[in-house]
Length: 365
Image 1 (tube, rainbow, N blue to C red):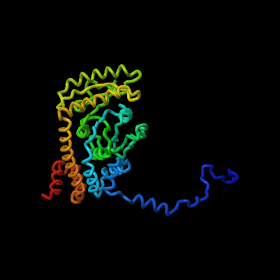
Image 2: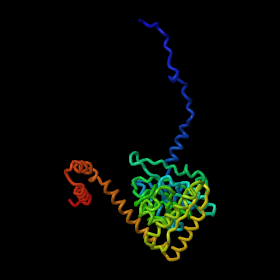
Image 3: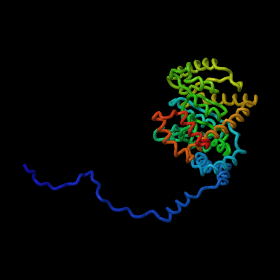
């Protein structure tokens, strides 16, 4: 059977040809914008801006310091060295805890409390980087919508990259820049908890561990290492129906802390419960930090620890630079892929292969 001929009607979802929009973008304006973007402030201009408290200059300097471009290294070092005489005048607080513990909400409530006291607060929030795409969400400014609008606060999210400790590679230098810009309280938020949190502990004065009740780790404390490093444990989300459980968790953690050896600082770690939503207990946290600073500055531990930290980061920078130099060496780049394949095919042991590459790098063949 032959169907009758029907007039073809185009689908309603087909896009109809439209009218080309008029050229409204000025080529001259585009040229001006492109030219402006190419202009990079000198190291001296960045330093002057930082010392004046200019947030744009501070942000651009941090971007420069975080850059992995080897051509930016000399300029970044010039900026950092010029800012050093104006640094070291803040209290540095590290805050960590499991995902979902409410770190961002707590930091916002804590930061708003501090700016209310007349403090200038810089939050260096480190977001985890994907091991697959290597990208980060960097959503801390979105989560701290009230603090980000505070003129006495500065929030800088950074990607953790390949850093084990959940601390961006250049966080230590960023602290120096923020201090030179006049921020007297630096808060570093890390991506999580574990033995690798030694990285953040080695750049702060006070280490705060946030916990929640009912997670089942009151006795173990996730890991002994993180518990030993903590100067205070705060049970967050102590509000609503959770108040009783939060205070029970506080008692359990308090008992667990007494199992650990005494700290060199002479400080006895404390436990507290708070609610970042209702702001209950936020004042107590700051009071605890103040008592810690009074004790450690009085017995000189505060200043000795900072000296040790400076030495630690010098050695870490050497390790980082040696690693970068090794992998960027042309001879190593030529040999690396073939050596990897030899290791995969069991033609050479991983240890012998590593020694072979190192000898090539140091030209000891």
